[in-house]
Length: 317
Image (cartoon, rainbow, N blue to C red; front, side):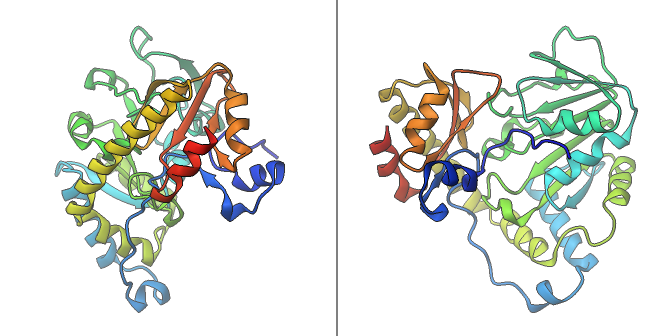
């Protein structure tokens, strides 16, 4: 059995180690919006009928408008961006894929599982042109935003799971025919359990991905909730404003605690601390879970607290 890869979450394991009921913990180890999109009333058919084409077409139309997708690109809803990441290497190769690091580790694992040669480096510049390149935009955990010049491989995977915090910086409009853009519904909308993601790209590639997913890949509730959220532009605008305020508040709070900001997005912040393990332990004793990384002794990543959790975080710090 393959060992689990390093991710945020894991509150059950943290509670087993530090005590406390799972529901009493504050999980700041992910970049999930703590104030999720409010769930709309669903039709009875959403639960009882197989998802129909009309519901998917409505979701795709809403996604095209919200993300300003060019007419030349197709859109594929999927049961989470992770399900797409696992299948993307089948679109070409195997060959040589370049992935600037540090970054979200599922991309490298997916390419390695399909016999690609995975090259990990800290920059896209100066690397010989690979057969494929993966860019997480903005990057997780550093918050780096890439440029259109970095989309220079025959197959480019542009993971914009966190880009909805600043849609004007999306590179979707600069994508070439060999680019697949990923969107996640679990981050900005805070509905990770809904398992809804999107692939956007040239119709031929999207058709191949759709065949790999099989029929009825997205549930009826996800189709309806996704459509409601993507057409609610007022909620999106207000949420971006709130996230920006809360990210600045978190930076101010952590500065007092001796943590220096390194980057991130308005959904998660990355900090340098004297000892990341000790910092995580300090918060965990107050039943607050944070994210540290196996490749750094100093980096700590924190998501945003919910409105009622700020006081507990301040007390723990």
